[in-house]
Length: 361
Ligand SMILES: *Cc1c(COP(=O)(O)O)cnc(C)c1O
Image (cartoon, rainbow, N blue to C red):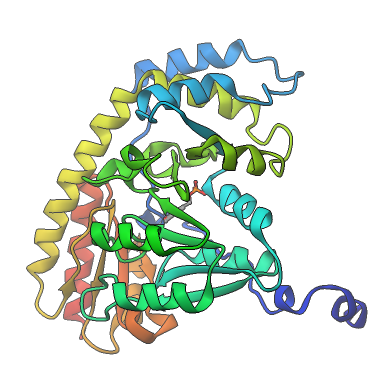
C-alpha cells in the first residue's frame, strides 16, 4: 500500500501534517480564540423555536439569501459590493486559491501569520511566500513586503488585520501601498473585526483588487462554520463557480439568521471581551520577565523568559488551563505563548496558575 500512496498522493500533501486540534478534556479552554459566552437563556428558547421550523429533508437555500441580506445590513457592507459565503473563512481561502491557482502562482503573506494561508497553498499546489515582520514588535516590514510583491508577483496577498498569532493591526498606510502595488488580489482578513477599532470594509470599492474576508467564528458562533467575503461582483461571480453547492448547511443558515437578528447580544459580548482583554494585558504586564504584545484581537501573545515557554505551557495544562504554545516553531516566536481572552473568572484562573508556573522556575 505504501508504494501506491507514494506513487499517487502528491509529495507536498504527504509532507504535510493534518491540522492538529488538542482535546481540551476538562481544561479551561483558552487556546482557540472562541468567545466564552453562549446565548442567554431566553434566547436559547427562541432559537430552538426557530430550529423547529427548519425542514431538514430539504436542501438549504443555495444562495443563502437571508444571511447575506442580514450580514449586509448588520455589518454595513458598502452598497454595490457583493458577498460570498464559505463553510468558515477557511473554505473561502481555499476557493480563492483554487480560482487563481497553478504551479507558478504564489500566495504571499506576512510571517508569522495565519497557518491556513500556507497550508491551503500546499493543498492546491501553489507556492507560498512568507515575508518576515519586524522581529521586535511584529509590525509590518513595509519595504520587505513591497520588495517581495515586486519580486514574486503574487496572485493573492493575505493580510490578517489584526494579525494572528501576534494580535496587532498593521500600519494602514503600508496596507494601502501594498494594495496599490499588488498585481493580483489583496484579501484583508478581518476575523477579529469585533475586537478591533479599524476595518477595510468601508474602503471596499476604492481599489478593484481589494477584498475583505470575515467570519462569525470569533464573535461567538465558531460552531456554525460561516465565513464571508465582501468585494466587487466581478470577482465574486468567478469565485462562486468554485463554491460547492449548498456549502452553508440549513442549520447554520437558520441559526446565523437568528443570531444576526440579535446581533446586539454579540456586540455586548465583544465589549465584555475587549474590557477583559485590556485587564488581562495589564495583569500580564505585572509579571516579571514576561514581554506582552499589544492586541487588537481577543487573544494576547506574550513571551516567557528564554527557554521557558514549553515548561510554562505544560505547567498551566497540569493546573487545568489550555493555551497555545507557539514556541516550538522557533524563530521570532521562540518562547511565545498565546492566550485567548475568556470570561473574567477564566482569566483570573489562568493568571493564578501562570503565577505558579513562573514561580516554578
Ligand atoms: C480564526 C481565523 C480564521 C478562520 O476562521 P473560520 O471562519 O473559523 O474558518 C481566518 N483568519 C484568521 C486570521 C483567523 O485567526
